Picture 1 (cartoon, rainbow, N blue to C red):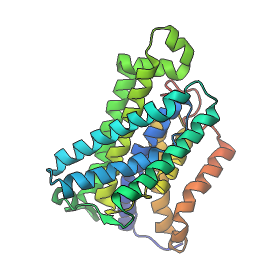
Picture 2: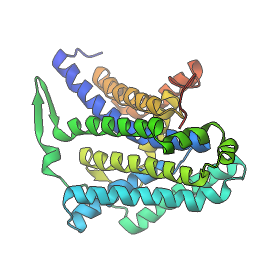
Picture 3: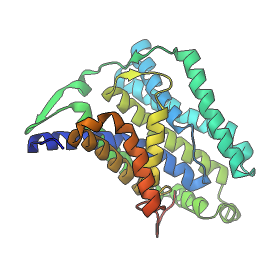
Length: 300
């Protein structure tokens, strides 16, 4: 293990928090859909990818101001998430769960290949926006401004989402549907609408994460959603899939763990992606329900 100064530790800590925040945004979508439908939405990583590309085209090709372009990209991605639920999952609502899972895998492959056809297979560079690329120095820690914005955005969205879930009628309906699907229907809750809203919110979260990801890691290709998607699914499982706060905790554990692994054991940096899978195995062995996976108050 290499010697690390205190300054270097804080530098890696800041990078880990930033990466963990991105994972958390994507993991929230996984956990919301699973909480409602008990479905692992394999297309979620590809929705994340679409958010990045929409942001790229809005700013670089349609020359929209960055903040308008990002809002358009996020809304478009949310609409696509709703369409996926409407076209690929709703018709299979009463089918065996394996049928819905196969449909999710099919949607994932469809989006990836369609993206290759539409966007092209060559890597593109996400636009460099000045406000997000400024160098900020806090004590001995040097960061780009986007690394500071990412955790702030994540926390604001998390607080907003928890408010919706815990203090609104829509959130109450979400919790009811996640507890008992049929009982919620008997209570005059429009289950289809609640599921649509859930997919929309989850896709918007993925799109925000995608845009922020593009600002931090500018290179993008149509298949880029695969590995972040897998990792964020693992983050949701680690935190306790079905629990929103657990997804955020899992995201931070994964992000910090990856960065610290590379920092403390640079000889293992080539195994950085493997860390997520090792973590998944460990959590399944010792706490299969995840960190927040028992006695949860909410399962949305």
